[in-house]
Amino acid sequence: MKFRKAELRSFDSGSYKATIRLAGSYKVYLEDVAVARNLPAAEMVAGRRLAVLFFEDHSPGDAVVIAVYT
Amino acid sequence: MELMNDAAGYSAPGQGDLSVLDIGCQLDFSPGYITPAGGESSAGLSYSLESYEHVSAAGKYSLVLRAVDGWAALSGWRARHQFRWNKTSDDVNVLGIVRFVLARAGLGLAIRSQSAAVTGFYPDFTIGPGDSGREVIQKLMSFVPDVIFIEGSVAYLVNPLPTDSAVYSYGDGHPVLEGTYRRGAMKTNRVQVEGLGAGLIMAESFAWDEIERLYDRLDQVADRDIDSVSEAQQRGQAILRQAAIESEGGSILVPVNCGQQLYDVVAVTDARAGLDAVRKRVLGIVLGYYPRRGEYRQRLQLGAV
Image 1 (cartoon, each protein chain N blue to C red):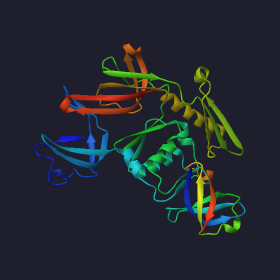
Image 2: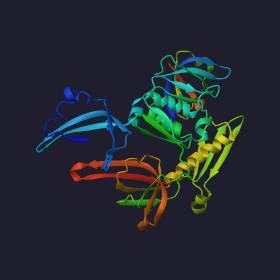
Image 3: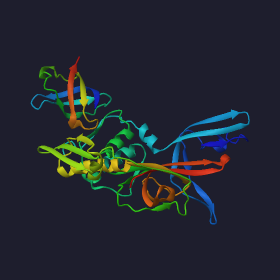
Image 4: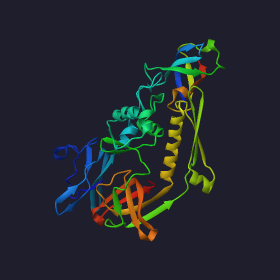
């Protein structure tokens, strides 16, 4: 299990998934990352910082955005 | 490696006649013997010089070389950005991702033997920025029963099977100077693997002989990249296989066998320990060459076949 910092690039309120840029990953994005449903869609604004939890370090399907801040 | 420097022959590494001996250079180590056919050696071991140190003390002048192998090169590689495979379709299998990561560290991949899982499993796999190559390779290899060892600039893939035949013998013509042989319980003898296909997938693998002796020792794996029962069973079997290999241990100290390689199966005979050509797998090799003490020996770490 690993926590990573990221930046929100886009958010799909229908599927509740996001495209994010992990900190340190210049111009390369991780798509279709699940977002915790307790995060209000209105707060998912591109450019905001995210906390992402990877239950399995290398499995993006097992990752979830758990916080949005700033 | 410590080189005598009494005559100051190694006083200026990286310069003049020693211009090639500098940080980052490749050191090839070829153990061998003087035989009736002359000097014979076995190539393959090579390292990268990480540092050197002059030692100047009363009666002792030497140059100590510290070098690292391919695993250190893998540890030294860090992902510049995120990588991802198989997001929407099965494009690159585990073997392909392993090959990609090894290449980032300047290592090639040669296949001695391979499992069905290493070519048939396509995980949705990502490497995060800053992840080390070594950690990534270890994670990928945890998906499959295969193992990797590195010699020089080549990594070799081996699928260790319990039916493998011995390729060399110790204890008859090749003496065993010391030996310890341990047999223990498997850390895990039952595995539940949970995956996610069209619905929840669950497969269990058992080592019944061990369970009968010790009751079950359970390991649980949840991996949403596993999308079929056969993949779940392969993962469970890979975990049990690793536990079986590690359930036996020990080592033997022998005169150097220049051709010995990791994961070879050898037959060990040691009557005092009740061993008569018992097959063991070589899990580690420590070669020591100490000219001052007249020692040239090899310690082989052993595991189950």
